[in-house]
Length: 219
Image (cartoon, rainbow, N blue to C red; front, side, top):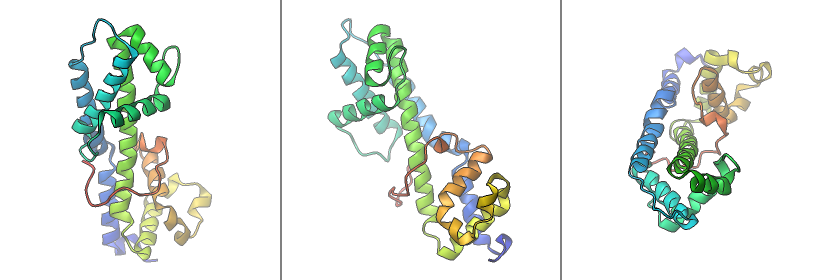
């Protein structure tokens, strides 16, 4: 295979991917808008004197819909029912409460602690959505910047990664044929950026294969 220095186009693609996946860039694109929307929603929150489970469900649905509308412009508009369904699903998946986990734990904390409990619920939902959006963003970068490359350029890209960050891969990986590693370019990029301090939350959960629409950027 030609040397990386002989393929400025491949090096340019890799450098562009590094810029897009820089932690500061990701935080600005994804975390910042979600955090700002979280603060705005909480600051306008007023609980009724009688706080019920029905009201709790309404509030978490409103919060999820608010995040999608204000912080995730690539999202489709959600109905109240869709927002509530997603909120309850996310709570079951991510919430760690004081007495219980999942939806039940979130409900108990909100009913016991009022605004403080609801804030904990909203923060948990926001953090989980950040992780999901980071994973979607990673898939978008792969689908738009690397997947369209020819097979030869994918192999050259892998060579460039091994040349730059071979130290962070196990010996058995470094010894594999480049043609075999080219199928694993997304995994190699995750491992490389994890080793050099990027992709904090992207690496926490392995993304699915690229399947995001590649026509528009998920700003």
